Length: 467
Ligand code: BG6
Image (cartoon, rainbow, N blue to C red):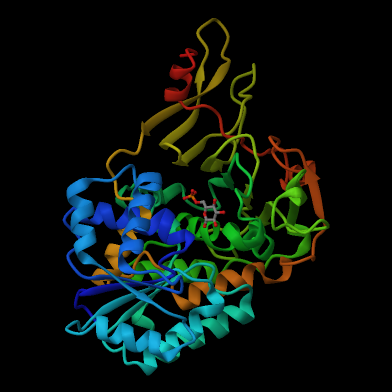
């Protein structure tokens, strides 16, 4: 189906995701001239349209960079509201009425996955699924089995090409720029393989805790919350083969490389929990849910055989930063008697908070001896007026463009990779807030290497008066 959507329906309209992400995206879409269709919120809150508009306003004040008067007025003219229980067929009858005159609604499920099936069924029974697309938020299930069941439910009521699974990492400008760099240049391809690359590291660090989401986090943990989805999508973008073109071939290649990632075993994993997590509201006193995870994974492909990929993520780490470091092999000989020393060459992609591309190389130190120092050639950009991931992805879904959405087979491959390490397969180790997680994580690194801890970038050094 290629027709653009002519109505946006979002379930969970009074919830957290709508408040933090969806209303701000709607305001930005209007500012960019991208939203001109009815926007129908559905929730069970006993609200009316005026209360719903007030919620939208509060969301923009808190999370949307403020209320832009003309954009907000336009948004209010587009907003509709249906109040009702997702288990009650009359909710969907009301929605059908609200959708009269539209042919291609886009239904966004900003609700817990346990309700996806019921809502999809309600949409089908009320014929609101006809000509429609459906957008589902991660997590897509809790493990391989439930992901399969969920996929089966969704595709029972909507064809696969009408199902859009959001992983907001794929909507990030920095992630798309990484993908672009890989395939818009000739310099990477000859060295982007096991002959030159020694290892790959991805760190997704957050310097805050669970921020009042203890109840949600108890059900998830770091592996389900971000490693299985956001981080494996980064692995896919970094390791995939060149696609035949834009669109579906991009999804084919991401799925293909994930299908070659070896299933994790407990020996590949370290789980950690920050001291104090158990005192968070909604968290069990004896919780063994991980707030930190580090894994070593292998891709059994011609390109990547024998190259370890190290992934690490956690809450309450020393900084908030997402960074990829691709480390190259050492030179084969030490030509200079005083030693080549230092670290091997690397490429570093920082995805947030800044977008950085850095090339780590060794240069000669001025002086009589042939000794050197490690330097980085850095290109840096602070995100400015770019589209936020949710805005970008909502727009793509409304246009029926699916290349930056997860496909059923990718989702199932990702769960297959982590399935054996979910739950209590590995003991959880304590770590101090503000540290880089449990010391055991260091043992995952094979050979001489170590984790690259993100350092200050030039703009930060300048701010601190160091540069
Ligand atoms: C979400 C997780 O999917 O991603 C959060 O549920 C996490 O726990 C967030 O903080 C990180 O996203 P971003 O875009 O801030 O890196």
